[in-house]
Image (cartoon, rainbow, N blue to C red):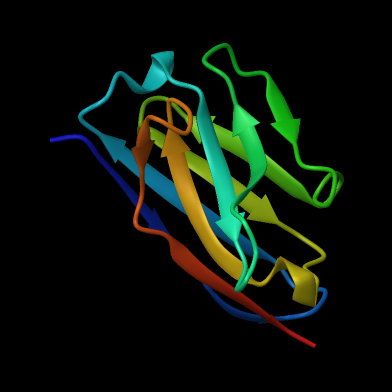
Length: 114
């Protein structure tokens, strides 16, 4: 069964940090581009970060320098380390494998209080 399961969301104060995890099963993890997206209330879903099958990374402009995406191939898990969090980072964060037509997780809520 193909599945992505996110964890690590929660409530944090501005300036704080959180680390999201996404455990994958049922896919050839090492061959997939894995991404994190987010969707804030009333806004469109946006790309936060991605890591390609060869390990190259890319970030949305709003999170560059604050967020870091990484992966553990042996654990089939992708991470999103979020530092210096801002209230505008509040959103549901979704893990994705294989692009927008690929596999999606159920989402995890991150709330940053000011």
